Image (cartoon, rainbow, N blue to C red; front, top):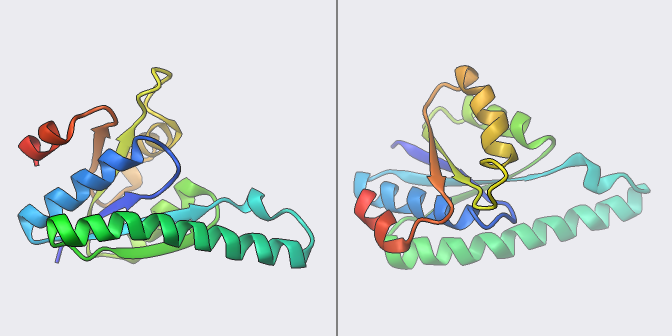
Amino acid sequence: MRKFLVVLDDSKECLNAMRFAAMRAAHTGGGVVILSVIPPDEFNHWIGVSDIMRAEARERIEAHYEVFAKWMRDKQGVDPELVIREGEPVDEILKQVREDTDVGVLVLGASIEGKGPGPLVTQLTKNAGLLPMPITIVPGDLSKDRLEAIT
């Protein structure tokens, strides 16, 4: 089964990327992998403190994921998979797509802030030649109706 890989982060544009990935998966019989990357700079503390911070970050990610997963299951009939990695976001995304050969499309949300598409889109499009699949960039300000029409 072909999977759509979408990145879960705290950005506003993440929502439309999630919607797009779920809708495309539902329409094509595919799956969704939701990847969240915990940057290493979050844990530059003593070992005990960094372990607690790591656990709290994972709990936050899992809670955030459950909101999207429930919507995907209830509205789209798609049961997403959660992957949590630690490291530099672009490096971890590249590692994930190389390790999971069922991933056929990387879905990213473009920023609506007017200062460019966002750091992930910028960095990953520079590395697009290293990816074994296409990147779909979803504008962060598309309406739900428009997303449904194009998926």
